[in-house]
Image (cartoon, rainbow, N blue to C red):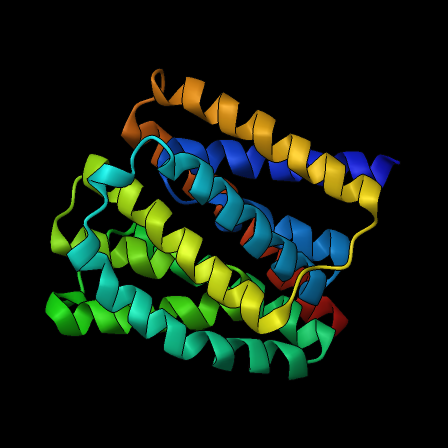
Amino acid sequence: MAADLVLGGVVLVGSSVQRLAGIGFALVSAPALVLLLGAGQGVLLANVAAGTISAVGLVGSWRQVRLAAMLPLVAAAACTVPLGAWVAARLPEPELLAGTGALVTVAVLLVMRGARLPALRGAGGALAAGAASGFMNSSAGVGGPAVSLYAANAGWTAREFVPSAQFYGLLVNVFSISAKGLPRLPGQAWLLVAAAIAVGAAAGAVLAGRVSDVRARRIVLLLALGGGLVTLVKGLWLL
């Protein structure tokens, strides 16, 4: 029972963060889900929950999606999701834990530094970001940072980014689930996860009107950095 409550709390926090900032569920929650459920099942649940909360966020903002800009990212991600799923299925648990933690940590540090990479500009940059994101999403559950870096290099504002990120998050997580299947959880855990997503989405919507974009971004990145480091350390300890 205690483990289920912790699981619900992790999903609730991640859902609130994603509804608030457009991305962040996987960054904040994937490391904790991996530690709770194991690398394979934790990443799968991160895919399911992140896709669901993205769909919820799109209900009121789908008209603001920059569809033409997102299509190259979605197409590139569709090509690399199967490769990420293949890698995740074959890596031993310690290596997958360490890899997930390392990907989250490096991605967060790049976003925190506001990395400006010429390779992430234009159509080529969209394809590169989408390819990296698709692989990371299906292998480690963290596809958002590559898209965030692309948006930063393209000069998007937070208002432009959030609905487009939710559109992308819905599709790339559907791709990932299609490649790997659903996580194996008991019925009680699924009900708890569903309730946590609903409450988290409502809380994030309320907070969105009270927390500045800068502060929301800082909260997401600090939580993600801590989770990534903990997961990396555990993976290295088990090697």
